[in-house]
Image (cartoon, rainbow over all chains, first blue to last red):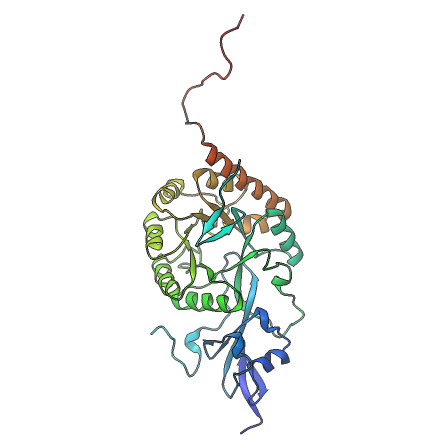
Amino acid sequence: MNQFCQIQVNGEARTARSGITVADLLREIEVKPDRVAVELNLEILDRQEFDRRNLSEGDRIEIISFIGGGSRELSVISSQFSARGRKNSFS
Amino acid sequence: MQDERLIIAGREFRSRLWVGTGKYKDFVETQKAIEASGADVVTVAVRRVNITDRSKENLLDYLDPKKYTILPNTAGCYTVEDAVRYARLGRAAGVSDLVKLEVIGDERTLFPDTAGLIEAAKILIKEGFIVLPYTNDDPVVAKKLVDIGCPAVMPLAAPIGSGLGIRNPYNLKIILETVKVPVIVDAGVGTASDAALAMEYGADAVLMNTAIAGAKDPIAMAEAMKYAVEAGRLAFKAGRIPRKLYATASSPIEGML
């Protein structure tokens, strides 16, 4: 097993230690887990899973939270149709 | 006058003015304006965490979720799939099943794609969401949304951020007559009188963002909106006089010299 793997976090390439958990990643990038949602390869994780889910090569992670908003046009989370290894869940 | 509380899906709300949290200068201004508005429901958008600049503060540091109902929206979503995805992420990031559902159909007007809205609402209701749909001022669509299980509807007054006020008062009145759930007029309010008018028609609440955040003095406008919504509500409950073409004297004739 390689020591490092390439993953994508919020659309940006990142090198991570192989096998780190989602919780490890959040600590590494200094994001408090209590106010975010994490999507791993389009699967939304329960917070209890942050400690259990390991990351591996090619994983796509989206870390989202709330920002100021009423109704305005802004779309910054990558489209699910471009994600690898998983078909969209609606088809 | 003691007014009954606004109740949606068993939840009680203190304020009939709901506000968005976008477009403010900073979080301090956001906090002060919301405080001044007296709103207890605030909408928020669901977006990527900025991981390159962690110095950025979190909106929720300024809006205590114990004090406010945080209502995630699906603003910016143009497809059913995206709206459902954002709603699920909002639920995962937050604490409740509430979602302000938006499926936008057109970039220039930001009018809702009502067909997509109904489809997305069906999916989310099945998943246990309390769906508050941002919809057009279309009574038929409003009724369909209620029929599939939306506990309130949120018809627009005018395009988002336009400040045009209620463009179609007759449709709004028909919606108010047709649906038996709370109606929250959402988007298009420009100034206090627009909000008062919506409440005078019988709307159960008004949701706005730009009218406050975009005002020269957002905090003062927030306060103006609070009074406008309260005044409009009171006038609705009090029952206005009918419009007449000719004068009716207010002072008695008797006793005149």
